[in-house]
Image: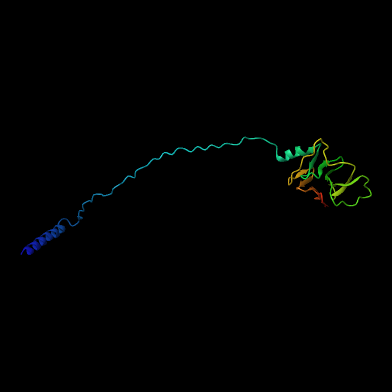
Length: 199
C-alpha cells in the first residue's frame, strides 16, 4: 500500500507539471532562466627582469700613414731615375736603368755556360746579361760595371718573390736566380751562377 501512494503522488505531480506546461497564451515562449556565467579570468603574473646594459669597448690601433709599398720599394732601389738591386744570394748586381738612348734591364755576375765571345767585343765578355727595348735577352760586352748605383754601400737586396716593375721592365728573384722581362715584348732572361737562359 505504501508503494501505491508514492506512485500516485508522483503521478499527480507529473500531471500538474504537464498541465502547467499546456496553460497560458499560445504565442508565449517558455521562459528559460538565465544561467549565471561561470567564466573565470586568471591573471598571469608579470615578472620584470632588469638586465644591465652591455658596454663593449673597442680599442682601435693607432693610425699611421705610410706611403704604399711600391713607393717604399721605389725609394729603396731608386738612384738617378734608375733602379738597382742585389740578388738574395749576393751573386748578381742588377738594374733597370735609363740610358740616354734606351732603357734596359740587366744583371752582372759570374754564370756558366757563357757563349763564345763575338769578334766585335774587345772588352769584357760574359760578365753580364740584359734585355733592352727591342729583341731578346743577350749576353753583353762591357768595359766595366753597368748595373750598380756606384754608391758607397751595396745596393739593396730584392727579396725573393718581390717583383720590381719600373720603366716598362719587371725583375723578380728567387733564392738562387733572377729574371728580368720587357713588359711589352715579353723578351728577357733568367740567370743563376750555374745556369742562364735568354728568350
